[in-house]
Image (cartoon, rainbow, N blue to C red; front, top):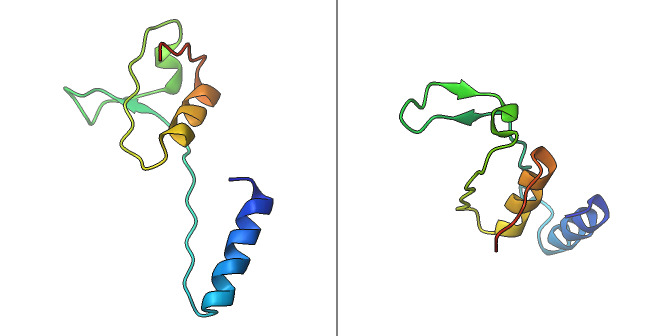
Length: 78
């Protein structure tokens, strides 16, 4: 979410309970790995000019797709 919306969410949560711990996270891909060799780290540029299947198991899949689009040129088939 945009920072302005995030600030509003935090403000609303603080109205409910001021001592509520709030944690933030952000999708920030750094590399790929080989499924047959998980210890083999591949740079993001490895997938340039390749067909790539992206699978998301996150709750808000659109955020995942938007992050992938930032990393590589994604041509969606969906």
